[in-house]
Image (tube, rainbow, N blue to C red; front, side):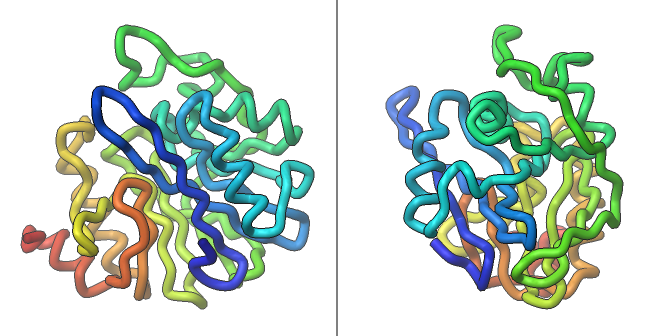
Length: 225
């Protein structure tokens, strides 16, 4: 699914515990190739491959992976993707130790984790990528996880929220408190996102929503119903 010129949702669906879960990684076209935004669950990289194919790409086009954060539903297939593509791995400097194995991911069930993978480039707030959709800015949005980032396309009014925001029934919602260790900080991150020019959002959990800055400000102010 093409969200805007050069930005594609590459959804992934998993059946577990008698329920279906769909998550929403993305693929972003750049002058040097495709950047994957998150890699999804371990063992399901073939679904991303199929969605890349639908968008006219294959693994050879993938030049980098940008992780929004360390959680297994975002980084689970990282090693597989790197093996297939030799992609450069990007993550926030506070996220990198959990990805590369220096620290255990803070939400690994039963101590199980995805295979560690080196982070080639450690990001900080404000880093900018050149893409087919114009600039893509790294926005530091901690709370849901240490080193969590979101990605903002100012020329498109588009936000890739990671887990800083969720969506349900076509409406933006705040972060899932059940899986957010520092809710207060996560809400402060939502407040920061409300300062950006946003018309539409891709939430990792909930998908694409045509709501933006006004709704994000409502969530930050506690008016999230």
